[in-house]
Amino acid sequence: MLKRKRTGWLLALFIGAAVLPTLSQQDEGPILRPRKSLVKPARATLLVICDLACNWKLDGEDKGRIKAGGSAKTKVERGQHFVIAMTEDGADQVKQLIEVKVNAQTALSIQLKPVRDARLKAEQEARDKSDQEARDKVAREEAAKPTWTDQTTGLMWTKKDNGSKVTWQEATEYCRNLQLVGHSDWRLPTIDELKSIYNENVNIGGNRVKGNLQLSIWWDWSSSQGEDSGEAWAFGLSDYGGVDSGLLGVSHNGRALCVRRSGR
Image (cartoon, rainbow, N blue to C red; front, side, top):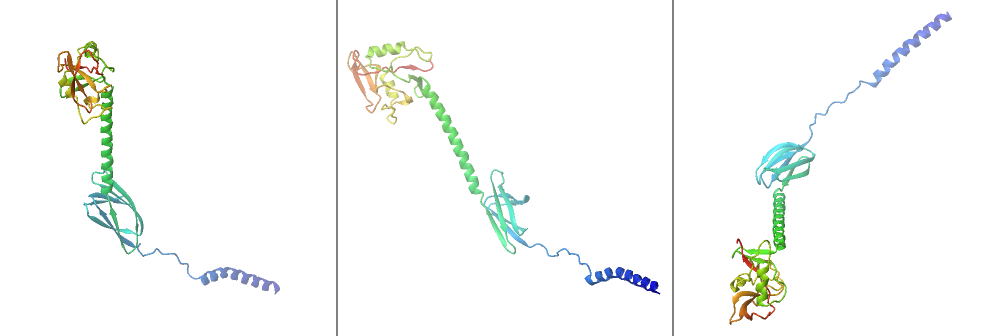
């Protein structure tokens, strides 16, 4: 009898253990799974205005062309967007980050003209600098030459005079014996030839002379006969800018500035 009761208890315990988990799951109710939201992201309008005709991109996507002073609208999501606009020739562009808000139109004005103007100005300044450097180079090369040729008269002049005071005879002899840049036909200039290199608008060390000539003094002998016999004309290549007749055998602080006909 006792053995049967024990067997019944064990059977009841086994059945209870099997039923309890099922009842526990029924008490928890049904298992719910998350559903995807059916609400679409909020969108707003972006208005892009271009001062010059431009092509533009939104977040890397080509959006087409905007005419000068025109605009374009597009729907975008809330947040930051990256806009690139460039001129039709591709030479200038503007990149801008724009914050777009929900339920509002956000306007973005692209100013390409200042960018283009700055580029053109920089290019012009670069050209001007290059041109000036070229002119300076030519000027340095010309300054280094021992002669200067007046393109108006075709006369070739020595860049420097003899450097000390001489009589007319000594000046004549100096030019006659001069050997320079492969030429030996140098001579004293006539008074009219000296007048041709005078320029009152130039001042080089007190001398008003063309061709950047470097004179040791402003008084130069000419080959022209002076006012009286035994005299020769001299010309003052300074503020004086006049002629004077000097005795051939007296220096008068005169210098020898030599000349020759270019092309001979």
